[in-house]
Image 1 (cartoon, rainbow, N blue to C red):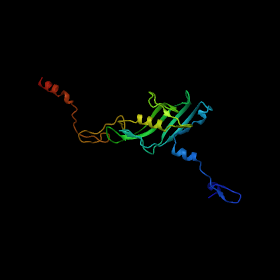
Image 2: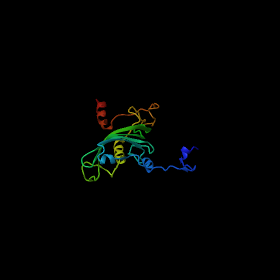
Image 3: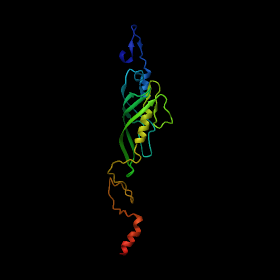
Length: 199
């Protein structure tokens, strides 16, 4: 092992092991946190932020984001009135679920636009809800989580042309055909069919 990989060497030949900075660990555990100190102190008016990482327990009735899949947000952060901050951006995330027609796995990627306000003291009963701004930290995770949950499909399809399952024998019509005769007559019109037969 070279001295570079183990750490810098002293004049007496002993090695000094480099200490990891807390920021490196923080970036792994909290990938959606943005330092907005320069914005809040007037050094900048706006800044760009791109963040990505996995989020657990993101799912609705018909679809979910895989636990280890990366969700990405590309956003512009701007100072707004007072000490509030406006976040405008695009969120993308992969999803998977059960096709409502053939019951096979359906997959896709959602893309949604967001435009939300962060405030030091958001009012819980306000009509336009905002997110909490904590000092110099702006945490995009609550915004990302809410946006993805709203955009996940409740009744996904593996494809728009999915033929589904035969209601008689249950065969997957995307993969094979069957000889079942499916009666598509609406039972509500049965009385009229009887009248037609009498004529």
